[in-house]
Length: 434
Image 1 (tube, rainbow, N blue to C red):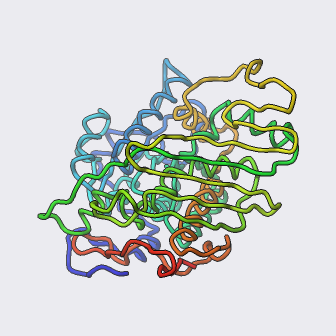
Image 2: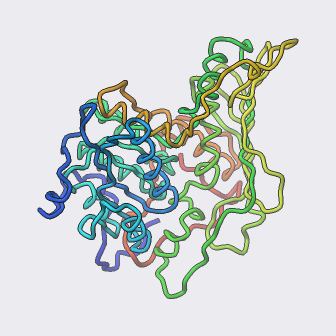
Image 3: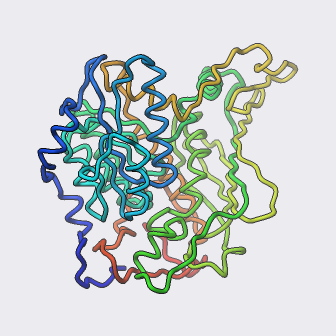
């Protein structure tokens, strides 16, 4: 699984990433330009300095949501800035530098090691992690070891090895008093919060089954450049490579799976799935374009999960719950047999959950209610990985088998040049990561 170890100017090993505990200090010019506090904790009126790691659409969107959250909390003096940006490619990093005016050429970093340099900029006490998910465990570990509070996009790993690393980093954050929020924004959305609390209080009786859907049209593919290395083309088209994205059951369907785990206050114990690659045959990469997975929870409840990315198909993104007394759309309604829909009388907060998740994290950083969502999002990500590995292999797999897998999908060396190329998974032939 390891790519070539040919020389490159930005070459780092996975093992070196994970062992990294000290960071080079940025120049005095950066310190002079950004005189923010350097501790991880901030008083209610202290400034927050952010390092954005991963400058694609979701990363810059999250940074914009952070700034909007700070203004929502204090329009007159938000006291929050994007201080540094980092990306593996120069184009997105430079675009982010131009978008966020407080970022200078001295705090705009490019390459596989750009995250290390951004974490070392003085004044950083809040980090946004929005690179392809395969890098998330490495970057989270570095941020927590550097004493930073973290907002990390979902999913948070692509294999069991990465999940175990995220769980360890979450525990380390607790020991250090650091805050972690995740991009599973439904957990910060009033409709879901109110409904799920009522479901957990027994509003529709014992929960017997759940359904989860993320069915949509075709996903983007940027094409390959024959003048670029295999590694560069793979990272450029990261969604289509399992080591980077986890496949779309992990990258997007994780939202719905997270809602179901939240409702059950548990994770599945096993999965039995199927799927395939029907519409992506002409594209490079090896992800599938449709999955159907049956999960079983410890109490015997079943979750029936579908996700699809095929053009000109009927879309559906939602969850549904069946209880002994009624049913629910957990985004904001439930119906008891013979009763009316709850949503007719409930007054919901319709604030933007993408902004609300940063409001909640900023409040925690500034001394409010602590927040650590590492375990929740790690378990929801592993739920997706469990379903993927079951479908890929055609086998019923258990939670413990996938969590304790010894094989990592991440290449041993991360550098421009050759990269591992995997075959499309074929059930009955594919050997699951267990």
